[in-house]
Structure formats: structure tokens, C-alpha cells
Length: 557
Image (cartoon, rainbow, N blue to C red; front, side):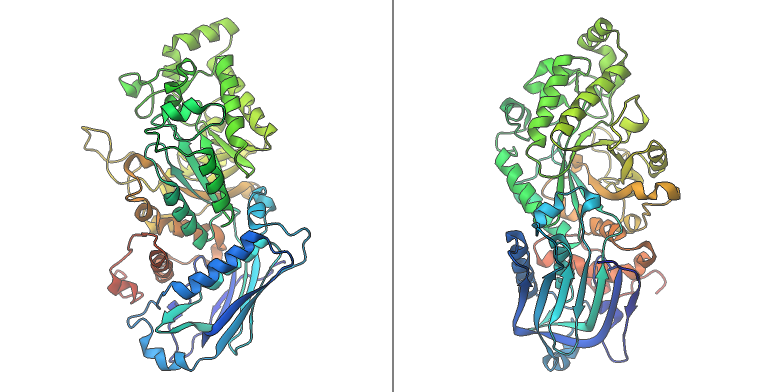
């Protein structure tokens, strides 16, 4: 499937529903709609015309049918569509959605497609919904593309009494993402989140076609993930024996996410942010819980892996091997941010080893990274690191290593000049924990990355701004990040959603179709209300009065 046009046309006639009735999020690459009301027939079905359809594709169809019949989402206008009840009751009926896969052998499951290298995935689809009662048609050249099309189809429908209808038939959509990596990062080390919390997050991510969950699973505060062959790391490094992700949990979570088009990229941050490992293996950790902590770490508690120790290098490589073997995707992050040099300068064991081998600290770090990344390569994984590994240290990264930008949006060009692909996660736009005040005791200041990053700030982000044309193809996409110093399950949904949905559209839709935040707001309200209907506690963007009166709460309206 090749798309050659990129346009959006919203056909609206006098007396019809308002333009805001067309509320797809993210906006498709090419969308044409009409103004005819179309109802689902009482016996509406989704017909899957795929030979030997994979189980997860069948399940995706079942979920779509369930969402359409059970969401009970009403049109975002003052009377929620009631004034059109007579017209809705007389509208033509849509009997069926036919789902077809362009011939591709063998047919891979959604999970298998999701686990490919991101540039090799196909997410494009075509969706047509006639206005005259003929069957609708969804076509894609991969099961992952069919999943994305089903997600769009769900968003066309509203409920009024017994009827489920769209006010916008006919609909023609040709769609594909602008960037392959559309992600969200969650820190589960500073505070723990249950398997159910993570699955609910995956459900929300799938609603807006996100493709990557960056799982910062461990840090100096806790190491809550079971490592096969090294059970004591979690047993002693987790906050509690009930707060551990088991090998079974990892299998469950990776499967659940992949079936929804989301690749999980696990991160074990090294060599910094590793203090919790010292609870089980103190011989591998320098300056554990040293005080005052500010001299040894970016935040308490301190603790870094002893990169100059051959035993620690071997231990870390084996730990990565054990964890990477449980991850079905192609990527694994080794972190690499905020390495504290003073910690190593003050660590007697590190200094003795450096002297014995006649190495500098940079040389020891390079040896550590080369060895651990080689271990990942043997597992078929592509390493992912934070930007310091490319910009701050003399480390020879593998050419295929992906670098995540976080310190500032200004860092991207420098990393690209070194030849690496990047994922944009700059704190000045995409850090969701900013603006909540300082969490350190006795401090009354603001957070280091103030101000709060509103959904408008996220939506205003331009991943290719300042990127030379020759490097634009190396920008894989971006992600919002939630560091959990002040977050836990109680506020997970409200701090993430719908702000992360704003980035989902930035990374899916062509830049020329991205509207200003005022015109996007009505559609964002719509997807936020849909999320709430599905049990995702997304925070309100405005009073309900404003949500059903698009534009009337704009400044100066």
C-alpha cells in the first residue's frame, strides 16, 4: 500500500452536525468525511477475511466489537446529540465491516509484527465507510496495520439511546504514521505500579496508536524485577516481596502490550542509578548510600556499578543476558545517564583497579559498555542509551545504538552528527513530572524542570525542529517520560493522560495536518472522554461546559 496524498477534507452542510463531530485522534494522514448519519445495524458484525487469522488479530476484532457496543460515548455537543434523535432513528444501517489483509505470506501475528525492528513494521491501512448501507472495508498489508485501522473505526461511533451512529458518513481514510517510535516511559523503581496499572496504560496507549513502552524498571531506590539466575537482586533490592515483577509477569506484560501494537523496551540503568543491586551484591556497587548524597548521585540514594572491575562487567553482562532473553522485541536500554565521577574517585576498589590495569575512568567505562552491549547483541538486541553516553563520555558506541535525548531539545543535532539514530524525549517539552514542586525534604523550591508541561506544550513540540535535512531520517520519533518521585498508581492516569495523547498525534500525523491547540482541543476532549468511559482516569482539560461548546472558552471568545 502506497499513499501519495496527504489531505483532510471535512464536508459539512447546513443543518448537519458540527465539524467537531469528526473527532479522530490522532488525525489520519488522509481523511475525507461527509455529513450523512449512519447507524450500526443491530446485527452488525466484523467479518475477518484472513486465512488462518492469528489469535491476537481475532482478539483485536472481538475487542473492537466490544468497545463499539459498550463504550456508550455520546457526541460532544450541548445536548449530546439528542436534537438529532429523529434523524438518527431513520438513518441507513451499516451491516458489516469487512477486514482484509493484502496477500502477505506468511501471515504474522500482531505481536510478531510489533516485535520487528521499528523501521520494518507496516502500520498503514485504508478504511472506507459508505453512507448508503453497503458494508465498510478495512484493508492493510499487515495485521498491525489492521489493528491501527480497527482503532480508528472505533472512534467513528457515538451512542444515543439504543442507537450507535456516526454523523460523518461517508468516510474514506488512508493512513500511516509519520514516525515509527511513538512512546511513553514509566519509572517503576521509585514507586511501584502493579501489572494491572501497566496493562491499563497499554490500553490507553493503544487507543491513540502508540508503539513503544520504555520501561525504566529499576534504579537505586529499588530493583523490583526478577532476574533468572540472580533471584537475590529482586529479593533484596525490591521494596517488598509483593512488589516484584516476576518472570511470569514479564511474559504476561510483553504479550499483552505486543498484542496491542506496543513494543516494551526494558531499561536497566547502568552504571549509575544502580545502588539497589548492592543490597544483594555489595561487591559490585561503589559508594552505596553515601552521605551527603549530593556528592555521589543526582538524587538519593547513591550507588553505581564498579565499572573497572572485571567481575562486575561479567556480572552485568550476564544480568543483561538473562533479562534480554525474556524480551521479545529488538531493543534493550542500558541507560547511562548521570554517572557521578566523584563516586568513582572516592571508591577505593575502583581506584585500585584502575591503577592495576593502567586505565583511565573513560577507558574503564568504554570497556564496560562494549562488553555489556556485546552481551545484548548476542541476544539479538539493539542497545538504547541516554544522551550522555554519546555526548559526555569517550565511549565507542555500536553504530546501530539508539540514543535518547532528554537533557534538552538542543542536544539532538549533536548526537545526530555522530551518526546515531535518536528518540526525542527532551525534558523541556516531554517530561510529565515537571512543575509539581521539589520533592526533597526541607526544600520549598520548584522542580528542576519547571514549569509544568501542559498538553499544549507537548502538542507544540516539533521533533524535526532544528534537524538538518540529511539527518531527519534518523529521528525515529519521541516519547513522554514520567519519573516517579511524586507519582504512583494513585495519580498515574491523571498525570499521563491525556497529555501523552497530544504527543501521540504529533508523532503519528503529518506535520502539515497538526492544528493549533485551540482547534485540536475538541478532538482531544473526545478521546479523553472515551478513555474515561473505559476506566482510564484521564484528567479533565476544561469544565464540561467548555468541552461541549468548542471554542467558547478560548481566550477572547
